[in-house]
Amino acid sequence: MYRVEIEKLTKYYGERLVLDAIDLAVSDHEVVCLIGASGSGKSTLLRCINGLTEFDEGSVKIDGVDIYDKSFGRNGLYKKVGIVFQAYNLFPHMTVLDNITLAPIKVHGRPKAEAEAAAMKLLELFGLGQFARSYPEQLSGGQQQRVAIVRSLATEPEVLLLDEVTAALDPELIGEVLKIIRDLKERGMTMVIVTHEMGFAREVADRVCFLDSGRIIEQGEPHQLFRHPQNPRTQKFLQRIIESGRLEASA
Amino acid sequence: MTRRPGKGRRKIALKDRLTPVLISLVSVVVVFGAAAWFIGSAEQWPRIQLQFFSIEAMLEAAPSVARGFLVSLQLWLVSLVCIGIWALILAIFRAMNGPWFAPLRVFAILYVDLFRGLPALLLVLLFGFGIPALNLPGLPKEGLFWGAVALILSYSAYATEVYRSGIEAVHEGQSMAAKALGLSQWQTLRYAILPQALRNVVPAMLNLVVALQKDVALLSVLGVRDAVREAQIYTARTFNYSSLVVAAILFLLATIPLARLTDHLQRKDRQRRLQSAL
Image 1 (cartoon, rainbow over the protein chains, first blue to last red):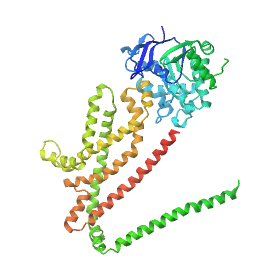
Image 2: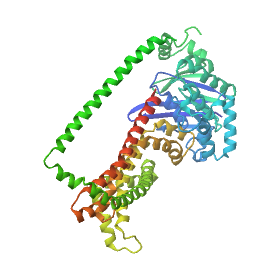
Image 3: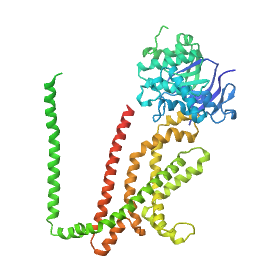
Image 4: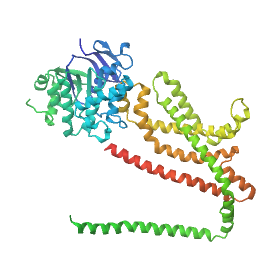
């Protein structure tokens, strides 16, 4: 059974078709990167997976269960599928620790002491222990994004969705965030990643999907897709990326 | 450390800084001095002074006006608390979306439309004279109580809108993050949105606080013995208006510091936003 199974997913924004009958299945421990130009529907697709964005047709299943199935209850889906955003979206009025323990305590009813101990363990694990009592604005962008990742891990999700998590970061801060994602892959986290970091996608992905006007027009193992793209549009897209210096041509 | 150039720069800077201050000072003294001289030398001035600024009458009226002002202050504080709470409830009604909350949302919208569209004085008269006249059993009959209710209802409409603008100013990414963490709509408001919204609205809310401080004087039409009423009583007895000037001074003493505080907070708030935008 697939962890995530998307069938014929279709979504309109008003008249505009943004997702056109997308099929995508993600296995356990698999890391799938979604690439494509802005406006190609990557982020929308990602947000459909955990129900943040409603879609018009098709279905999304997590472990074989439709995400709108009653068995998920009010917050079961959000416990199974975590998401991290481009702009971190940490709560600025809460300390790092409170950001992380909010959902475990208020949504999942875990005792405060237990939730805080678990949060501290996660923070230590990712080298953020000393920031537990800081407020988000006291941290660098890279640190904030790492905290946001830890926050999404605090509910122990089985699937993690990453929505351009390095796009808002200064180049020198991207590395620390990518490192966490690599760690997560090693721990076997199932991830769907929307990214513009082609080098990173090539390195971390088990499979890369190229989206164009709401469709996955090419997908494959990263070395295959980056080295020998079949579809002319994929070729053109990658050519542009290479020309802008963000991907080495001979990899 | 190179001291000399630094010292030289500071000297010039000091002179540059002082010149505008001096110009401002001199021009203020000249303009206001001329105005004072003009008014003071007018033929009518002694009469005006006797009528409005008689020290004797002021001292005589001061105790009762000050007592009335205490009533004004109490009314103001009690109303503030009620407005703060009631408007927050209305703003939360307004912010809850989802079909089940439609009645609350509609109620809040109608409420704001109604009470923001009516003059506060009209409401004070309607409630303060109208409801006691009904002689309803079990309800208070004092004009003071119903007048205050009218003010609270009226000001809550404005305060609701202030809260609402604060809620809407919180970036939508915040509620999306809260939803993705599994928080319910109420939890999202309670833990993620409102704490930020309340901080956003402090300066705008203080403007209402200052406005209300003055508008409690409306209750004097109901015979509530606040500062304005007490001053009027003195005026009616002596035909001297200095008592009203005493009341005016008391109001200014209360509102000017508040207005300065509002300015200060607004400035700080703007700086904070600029900083967080960087």
